Amino acid sequence: MDTILFFDQTKKITKLGLAIGANYGLGGRDSLILANFISNSIERMVMFDGVLLDVEALMIDGKRLEIVLPMDL
Image (tube, rainbow, N blue to C red):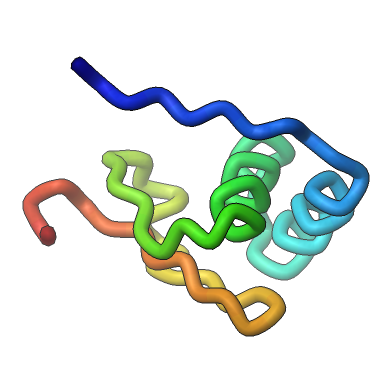
């Protein structure tokens, strides 16, 4: 069975998402998803989205989030 993660969107996460969007030139949905991952100390995101894969990694508030293809694990 797949694991599905749900996180509450807080004011802090919203502000972080806005900062990510501004710093990395990403849209709102991608920025909020990344903000949730970073806020919850997730270190690696696996996906096929070319826009996010071009970012490769984010460093925000001393936390790093790496974005990779499944075959790069």
